[in-house]
Every structure is written in C-alpha cells, then in structure tokens.
Image 1 (tube, helix red, strand yellow):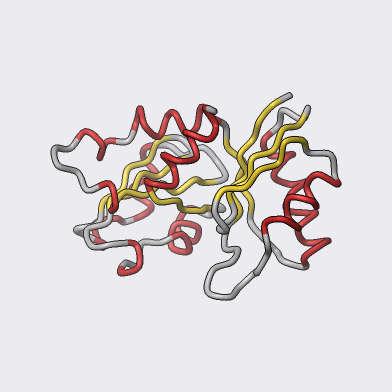
Image 2 (cartoon, rainbow, N blue to C red; image 1 turned 30 degrees about the vertical axis):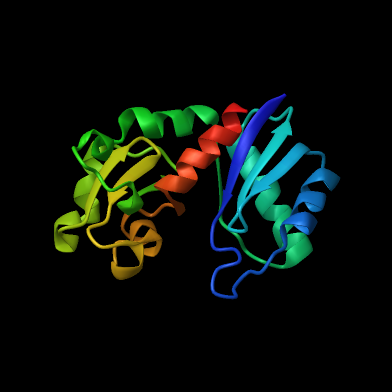
Length: 180
C-alpha cells in the first residue's frame, strides 16, 4: 500500500469550487482509497492505495471530483520524498534570517530543468525570487503571495504545466503528517 498526497488546486478559495472535506473524503473512500485524511479546507488529501503511479491516482481523483461535484479541479499527487526534498533543496532556507512566511513551493505536473527558470522571466518580478528543482519551484516573495503577479496562473502559462502553490507552513505540516 502506498500513501499519496493529492494537492487539489483552487478549491474553497473565494467561494469557488466549494467542497466540504467530509463528502470529499467519503467520495474517495467509495472509489477504493483507504485511510483518507485531509489537511485544511484547501485541498490537501492523503490516500492509501495499491496504485503506485502518482499520475494515475491524480487522474482518478480529478475524474471522480468532476463526476460527483461537477468541478474541474487540477490535481497533483506527490510523495513523502517530494516533501523531504523541499527541505533538503530549498535554497532560501539556507539564507540567514529568512522569513519563512514569504516562502512558497509551486508543485508542477512535470519535472522541469534548471534552464526552465529562464522561461519564467523572474527578473521582471524582482525582488521576488524563484528556483527550480525537478517538479518543484521554490519561491521567495518580497512582500507576499497576495501582492505579486508571479503566481500559479503565470507559472502555468509560461511553462505549459499544471501547478499548485503551498506556503512553507503548509509544506512543513504536510511533511509532519506524512511522517506520523
């Protein structure tokens, strides 16, 4: 049995794609997932399954959400190792006096190359910063996520990927839950 973490993008945000966690949990159990648990109302769902392919798990969840709730919800499934790599490879954690409230991770649907950072044209968002590491983009916002145009929509458009962003506090808590 493999534990997967499904990151659902854009649910329960500003009144859009509203979904209560209990019905979501019941729906996932009904299609065969075990030990389903959620974290926050913003779409962080742990599931156990015999299916090892993260992309297949993502497709199953996305398809069932559309069937049951009628919402088209981009879904990225990651592993405990993905979260561990966030801590190991985040270049901004090495900075002295880093404000972790300004750190975010964009999880993307494909593995990127370091050179893809050029496609993001991050210099036009200075003093915001970004660094690519596989299927993660580490982001350090100068002011905050709500005051920048360097967001999930921009990343998706520039890199032709599906992306969902989590703040550092959430990433930390998700790894702690995975480790329990």
